[in-house]
Image 1: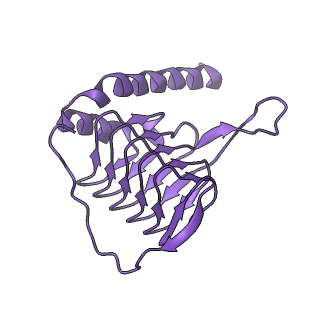
Image 2: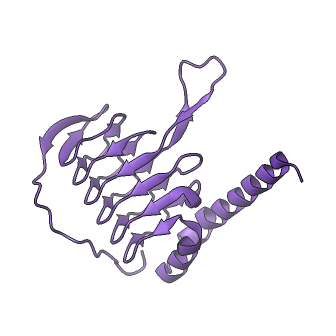
Length: 185
């Protein structure tokens, strides 16, 4: 069998697994079922991490979720071509989008452009924030609700706006450990 036929089969199988999770399993109000599936599908699902109802993954094989992190409902994580690494005790608010792939607006043939996304420990990404491809969010950083992050964010910085700009700094002595596991989420 040719390499291209193998690649095509893997791509089809991956698309079917993503569809199965996003259309059915991810909408099932059983944390046990969702997490059992995610333990098999994600690159890593950290201990005591929580993925709430309605979260979507565009390729779980390239998504690593650190211990005690929380992904709130409706979040989209795009691991299609590049990895997404999420650290420990990270809180990702509802309906956030973490993207690794898009198109080059300067390309005459609509070429793809993207890159890995890394999110440091104890980062907080608020409601409907958008993280664009190739961005690193530093440890303890805060991304405000609705912010569009197109550049790296330093550790402990608080950013807001579109495009996101630093508006403050978070304390550096963070000690919390997340353990958010509400019923039926």
